[in-house]
Image (cartoon, rainbow over all chains, first blue to last red; front, top):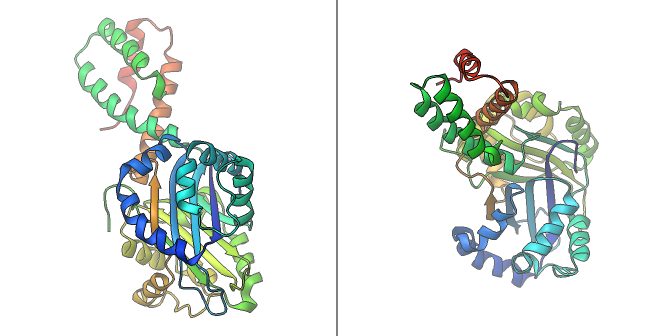
Length: 179
Length: 170
């Protein structure tokens, strides 16, 4: 699942009770549109892209309960990732998985981590990431730096060496958190 | 086909594998080159893509899980997948039930969409940025760091000269 790259994939399939399927179908549209649910998740700054989806149309021979399919592209090892969710977002974890068979709750976090990892697909992946070593923080820093660097270049076009050197130092100081 | 930044829905599909072909799928996945040589690197605007075989469990047949994040609209991405990677698609998805092949892109698209798992809740770390933009900004950041290190302690005149030698692009 994890590799030497910074960005890793995880795919988790958890069977859920039928009533929970309907609960998620009812609540997700609002939760997905509103930032108040997502903001704390984004604050964790290690999710590139994560999706939760529902599987209800199963192939023949499959059991009658639906599944929550969670798939994410994230930074770092899977265990730490799941643990950060459990510790940082316990209510949101309940809101996503409380109707899952065997869901232990977010605390103690070890039980939740085991629940996630037990249901994670543990097969060999073919995985592609365009920038496999760039963390969410690095990407964000690079995007911010790009805008700031454009302004710096515009502002320093006409400067002589002394003024330019001062402006360069100010730029580096101001942007050190993005470098 | 192009749009601003990553498609927030992405695409994911669970594709039932022909029972006798599990080992073949595993072999095909193993044979795909990793990293920048992955076939998905040839699909412009693709941020992430995964292919993984799910073993039969809970009465479910084994399925190939395919998911990708990209800058295009879903239809455009599937068309590009079908037309840019026909051999890879046929080699991998050809082991799945009712796979129509890449000869008729609309059929390929319809088959993929029939197996789609739509996301209900999505979190995106850097939503507005396209894959090309992210890569360009990462390269620029690296160049700025290297320039700052290389010019540390230089006199203003030397710094200015080094700066003027740089081509930072438009």
